[in-house]
Length: 137
Ligand code: FES
Image 1 (tube, protein in one colour):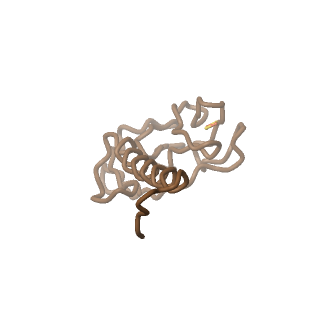
Image 2 (image 1 turned 45 degrees about the vertical axis):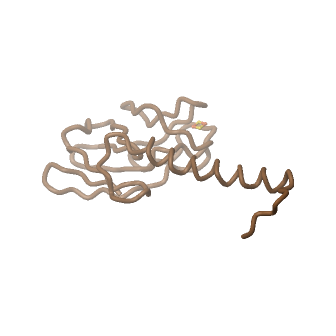
């Protein structure tokens, strides 16, 4: 692509938009890593967590995932991004995964919507158990 010598307003705005998207992608990946173990790429996961850190009948946010243990020894994981408007969920209680932005609640066991405004379940992730370590991807 060549750059015109006298760029139009549209050309300048389009270039700025591409730069903003690029910055967001880089920033979002960095912000989402949290205490996670890096997978060596800019994509989410995998992350590892000690199984003992996930409370029975509740769960924990391990960005960019939320990990639950609905019943003893059964682990589930989901993307921590709320399906309503894409904000990270904020809390896991003994009743639900809670997005405090607009009040959506999701099931600990399958990520389904318990209370809107979200209408879609959280995106399921894969949990691999190895000894006392959970690997989420
Ligand atoms: S972004 Fe989660 S309820 Fe709106």
